[in-house]
Length: 150
Image 1 (spheres, rainbow, N blue to C red):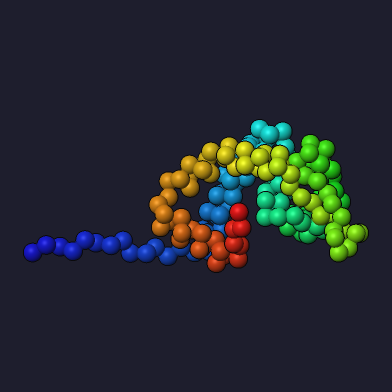
Image 2: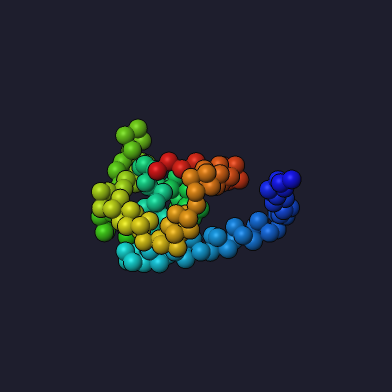
């Protein structure tokens, strides 16, 4: 008589453990991201702004909210990115008082270069099967409500 293959019983994982794993994962990702940004002579905040703008143009206030930073901080970040011609500001067509920030072609190239240099993150994700990638994407969407747009 042949024995049926044993399936591994699910292990109960508490919220504290998951939060610790998320914290550790975020630390690896952020370290990877910060090093990749530095390779392009950018701070993590500047690179984060470029990443946010990959989704499309954004008003300065909206960008500050997305990046969870003060409006005065976003002004300095965008000033430095604009000086390097990675972004440009344009007056909003419907409200000239509002300035929209737009990623330039060079800004898009730099954002792509940063992502390409995130070797620890890339290697970890590349090790996942297609099914695992789909499951991870769905779980991240359920937990954080985020849907990738790029």
